[in-house]
Amino acid sequence: MKRLFRSRHDRKLSGVLGGLSNYIGIDASLLRILFVVLLIFTGFFPLALIYIVSIFLMPEETDY
Image (cartoon, rainbow, N blue to C red; front, side, top):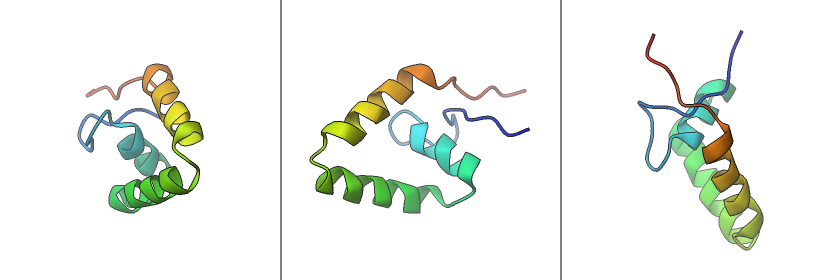
């Protein structure tokens, strides 16, 4: 069963988008570009708030 974690290996800021891309199965760079484009077009607030909340709610990936 797949679980959603913040990535320890594929992170630029906090690992949220790296973990989400691993969960969905797409390239992390593509997801980061899409996130930045959507961030600009939505006026920063909704997606930035979701990103910040997910930093605290998503558990960090374990190594075992």
